[in-house]
Amino acid sequence: MATDMMAGMPGHDASGVEGPDEHFAVRVVARLLAALGQAMLFATVNQDHTRPQPRMDPRAAAEAVTGLSMAVYHTPPGDDLVTVAGEIVGWTRSTLEVFRDQLSVHAWSSCPCEESHGQDETDAAVLRAIRADLLLLPDPATRTLQAGLG
Image (tube, rainbow, N blue to C red; front, side, top):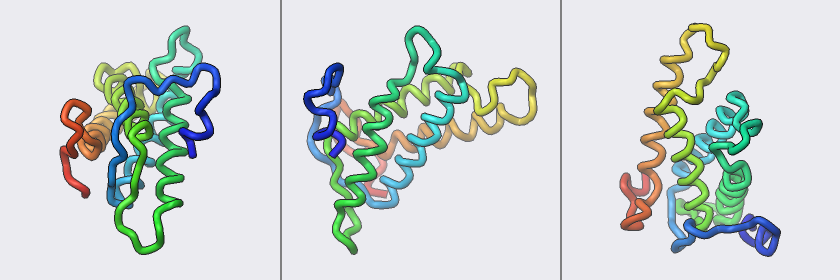
């Protein structure tokens, strides 16, 4: 649905994210949705959208959330695997990679207020989680899952 909705709209360019459909366990898709939510929250809290060149593409992040959600919705009841379009997988990966990179260099924080009240530990835990979440996605070079179907 997300790819259908955005097709033909000005500025929509899925280059670099195309690939085959992928199959994920329902719980893996839920985990990826949570990770995308955190990525969007951190980008917002850290005012990424106000930068001349934002680090995160909010459109790609929104398409990833929509595409993953619709893939779950269209999965027949009782099925354990969700089929996700290759573009959606690419948008998910690119969004989470930006999130990981911004956390890695301490450019983004769960609380960017510049006072110390535990956010370093929180940020480190989120970074570990995002690194693990990225392992749930196929490696773009080999198109194979790095951590199985979960």
